[in-house]
Length: 525
Image (tube, rainbow, N blue to C red; front, side, top):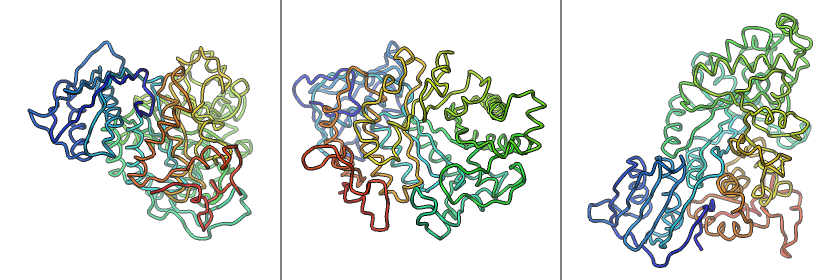
């Protein structure tokens, strides 16, 4: 059995083994992937390139789809066939797994024939660093794991009420005042225990660091999508620049999780100018085709009382405050078009009237029949699926077990399968309110990321959870090798010694207490 995650469309062992030896000869098409392969084999297996080495031939076939590939391994060499660098790159990721390059320096590869292509074009993971900051090396490690799993979109949540984590040169206070909160909520109860000390000073990415990470991701065929949340979840920015709010509020960077009433003022030009200036700088750093503006959980109570917002509603002939958010969203969409970017927003933006059909809606909450998602799809529009019932990684496993993540499908979300061509793909967010350490991040994310990758790549008819569990055991050895933590089966499947489902005691898989008791359910070499 070929131990590959995500599972290919077709994979057949043909008998025999190819041993690469000390040298390989890389030839043919796709020079970028050839260079990547040479570097990968040298670093993992000590294999160098030489004209008389084992042949790894790269061939171009324009009849294949963008990310589709063919991989043939015989006792005399390897042939990779694809139509693009991306397809060739994914073939190498498959070769890496079946050859156990990360674990075995002998680089012996079972002879086989593999034909493969993804189900969805968009295969994403979201990291929240606004609430807790993990740093460049952790981001790069996450990107490497995503690439190994053929995931291609990294959604980076860089701003929120509780922290602003990206340098904006026109607004220097954002990374002086906006990065720091004076205390941190530790449990879902805002009146419960708190960490009474400042968090976040100096914890942000400079523009040069952003450029480095974006370039690093590009080599792994991962597009990074920045998110700047607006008009809600903007408290950290308003703490720096009160003129962005309805009443020029003197607020501090958010210290509580959840929804904060403070909101940007959509009735005054200051907010629009700020947003466009931020978009200007960020668009220069992220060359990809998407820009996420959040748009979720935008409370309208202050807009109802704000003279400027009410005047704007009257001036534009809008129905209500929801329509005002729709106007703001459309203004941002039109501005982003001048940057050759598509606007992405969480599904609450559907509450707005007359939303531009070019908007990309990311569905995270609610029934699609009641929140407008089905109506949006009926109009022929596009969505990204990230429903909290299956794809959210910050939830504890007793609420969202591993098989729930794996068994994602449109029908489970109440969508007719005929909408699949309008689904760009799926993405799993890892919100960081209660992930105060990399250990907790890893516990929540792995092995969910492996399940997510298979859900996004593997054809529906090929999926089998028990088969996935078998292949996962081999992949977990890679995590062990790199010292990456993960939830064991007792935690991820919520099973006891008898194999029956149960809830973990005190839900320790999410509560990161001072004794880190959740680590009793984590596996780390």
